[in-house]
Length: 481
Ligand code: ADP
Ligand code: MG
Image (cartoon, rainbow, N blue to C red):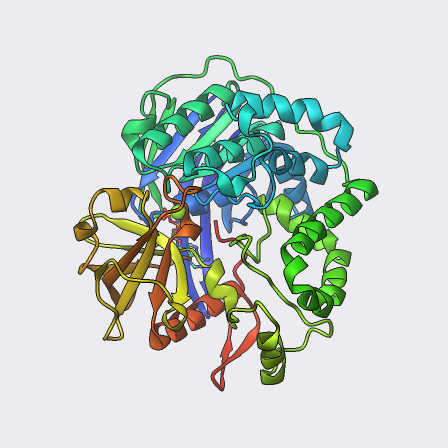
């Protein structure tokens, strides 16, 4: 089904070349359950990206169903992804304000199915992943394990022959991880599943092949069970999205926003013009949603978040901010909200990983439970759900420890920066059960924020950005997975 011959992937960054992986040879068949492991930065995600057509390769040959792909255009790869690939991500990438049903349904609507014809399919899939009783529940109310089940349902309902999952259990506790892997195996049947994970023990009994990567190379490729006769790969059917669905989806999104805004009607009036133009560009959203299973630009889909864009697309001025600030019920404005879309990850020598999002310390209004407020630049505080498994393991294991920061692009340690958690607030969140990224908040002081802002902006875009009077030229990044 998929065959790589001496394939290499390089990155060009500001004149420097870095290697994603080199000279990979691999043949994967339908019916396989392939597990990829290896330390951070060894090239696992890059390999998944190339296999799923999200990223190009620079050297070698890649065959899809026997067809060589070096002549493939961006459009060919888009077709390939639509017909063959479904992705599952560590951070679920679901739309939190949608119900379970709506999340699963969305994929099919975006692939041109009519609402009526998908109902049975969607319900069956939800039943299969064991969430029938939650079908009308908003995803934000589910636990981490349940969210990943929804993501699996969404991936499966597309009926693509290949399922690609990059650390799907990275945010789950041991038990939910096990459930998720088991479910993946159960529903995937004769398809080709490729999973990246650190927890080899959890997948060992299901794997048909285990691949270990190190430094951009495959250092072990062990077949555990042979696939006797490869099943034919059925392409997933898709059409262009129907006008009706486009309209309805647009309405649904707008409607969700409107209900949120009833109390701040003035804001709605203020931004409605820009919203309308937003939905006129639904084409783009549709494309992004298809490619990544969610909107690429705003990864943090919190219901509490309102994104405002000016109709004439110019930057916000001080006067604009003041105007918005004066509106009733506006608590504060986050100017550089790209920070919120950044999956922040820190870790220490004891292998404690904490994922979350970055916030401005000046906006912190909580009450610390342990520790103290930051005094030095590298000190941070953490607001984390009580049910987070790291919290259950004991606050003393996280507090007053030094952490490295994981680079969101390369997966490697960010040099020259270290943080210390000096204070922790835990909070009761009945909707949280096992470690969603967006529910954990790090509060950083101005200096650190500035550092990450600059960093993130450079990673995410080609824009020339102005921060505190300084221009930064940024680099495009095609795919974050
Ligand atoms: P893993 O998923 O195993 O942690 P990745 O596939 O993310 O590793 O990264 C493999 C290597 O590719 C890293 O050493 C990193 O330096 C490089 N890399 C990945 N993405 C990019 C990128 N967008 N730009 C430059 N280098 C990258
Ligand atoms: Mg990775």
